[in-house]
Image 1: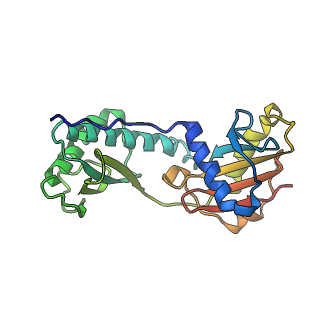
Image 2 (image 1 turned 90 degrees about the vertical axis):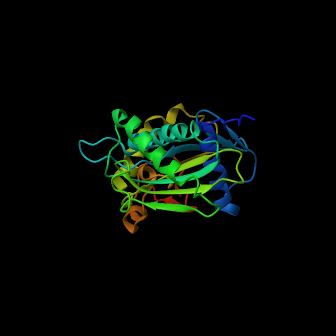
Image 3 (image 1 turned 120 degrees about the horizontal axis):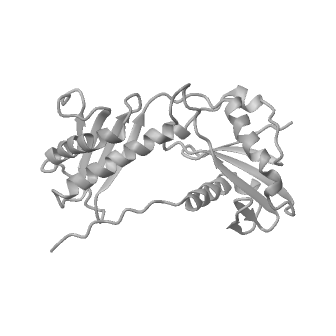
Length: 252
């Protein structure tokens, strides 16, 4: 019997934002107003027809003359997707595969076919040995076979899944979120403020540091929290989604 391949679904922007707001409300507990939260356009969400919440995601500032980090993350995800297709054309065994990338080694579109095939071959070598416990394939022991920019591959049997699941991890330094980065976000959002539904009683801005990727990760410093920000919003919150921490920023 032919195995049906799992459909790959991409989470839409609104679904992602809904998850952010839901978790934000949960973390705020009693400090979050009661009432129905429903999606809107300007702002992104409304609570009980009285509070508007605009959602934006924090991304690290790219290095000078460099490309945005999220662009490279997208390329690595594309590489991983192509490697998964390569493997699934050769093996029907459901696998859980986690690949740790080195952010200092860029991926370009022209490199993807060769690197995806190399990565796929490395995974296929582990198929017979992939028991329920993970098989970790270290880079240092397989330098010649490893595709450039891959630090480690973990392979295990996905017995509880309907199909294979491949995930990525990036390795790099997480730096402080700076007041300048927050001010840049606020300047952009302040310019759009009068396009929101100003009949609402209050307007909050929720800045989300996702944490699942290096491009949207950062640490919180005393300098960041002590800095007073120029804002049209009644309250500004910085939400570290992965850690579940909520910080309210000072406004002038």
